Length: 266
View 1 (cartoon, one colour):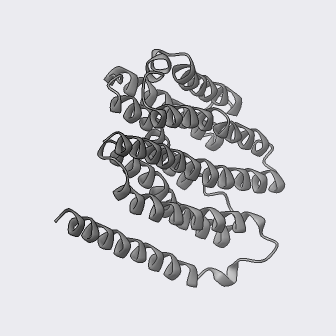
View 2: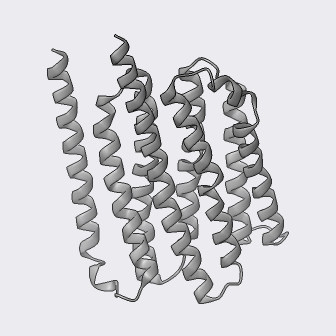
């Protein structure tokens, strides 16, 4: 009965992935001729789009192979890359058609995916019983402040200049880093399983080192020149593709470690 149920879930997931792939192919048909070999920004959009889709399929299918306490984390990992894939199909088309940065679409994507990534820390800590609702809301609030400040600074919808809002966003990001590396959660997770410790440390590195690429893109894009805008989009695209995929892969690897350890104990 259990095996039959797993096969049914696997079949449904496969059908879902095929549907997503078909949507990508249909979307690509109208834009293929618009992309030239020298358009490195468009190429980076395509790389990110393909990688996000492949990652989503992988995380959904692998969700059935991990322990129950990791399934929600795997679902969140799939949501992060799945939402990003959906938005990137539109951002890619926006670029190849208009040649302009998809600023609003990009921040809409981050407004959904970044808090999801931050929430993974809460899920990992909740799995070992050391999470608090207050910690979740602090991390969630800081991620929103970081994103809203970044959007205001890049779009100039409110006065104050880009560097004021850049500074506000950086303060929020530093606070997230502080909570992860110095807060009480760091000491408590040291008592958890090997898989949980690995996931916590790996995601902490991604949020610290991987996310440092985004301020670099912001800084390089502020000159407003065509070259600067191109560099900004390439940096953002590759950072998204690597960070979101790596983030999910770290969760998957940790879940696999923990699942194997639990099975061997039994």
